[in-house]
Image 1 (tube, helix red, strand yellow):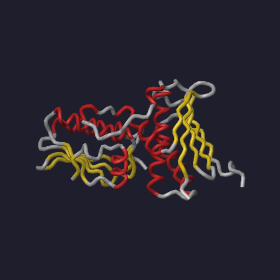
Image 2 (cartoon, helix red, strand yellow; image 1 turned 60 degrees about the horizontal axis):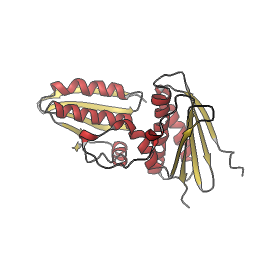
Image 3 (cartoon, chains in turn cyan, blue; image 1 turned 60 degrees about the vertical axis):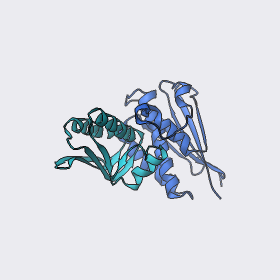
Image 4 (cartoon, chains in turn brown, purple; image 1 turned 90 degrees about the vertical axis):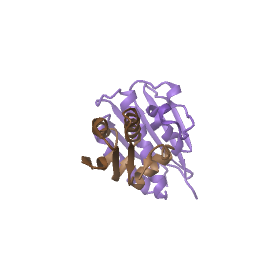
Length: 102
Length: 144
């Protein structure tokens, strides 16, 4: 199972929808999409993780890097509907409270 | 029954493309023992992290190395071993450190995979391999 990444814009800001497995193989693609979206994400960037069935530490590190980049650009960064698989890893890494989760 | 009769031994290239297949195999092996689902998820993640570590650090991203996995069950615990023949990782990198909710500015996500391995397993032993490289042995207690 691969990874599908869709970026869209709305009046509320930018949204990146991620579906599939995020691991060492696929996380560079997600990193690229997030870092590309941050500078133009007026109104904030939201990452929809409802369809993520697996995430490893490289995926988590990518989300942390996105959050940092968003802060540098003075824009918001939130995770939307993270799947149980994502929450389990964020909790294990004790990073669940670092992100704004909607 | 001989304890080694249900061992799984696997050698894979150090190619990130193969990690999904490794996870599927590890998952089905772990599911053949009486392990709850959440623990099985964590074990699959931690084995994936050990393989990722071999690819990223021991082979420095090269895809032509080989990573060897051994999955073995004892009455008291499940034992997993991941070894490579790449560059030996410095000891301080594989040490256990506290994982606490940190300030995001101080976060060093580089070693996160190693810390997840320590968190998931009851015993973790990183050591240099017999003929160079690295070998990590991870034990999970089986609940009665």
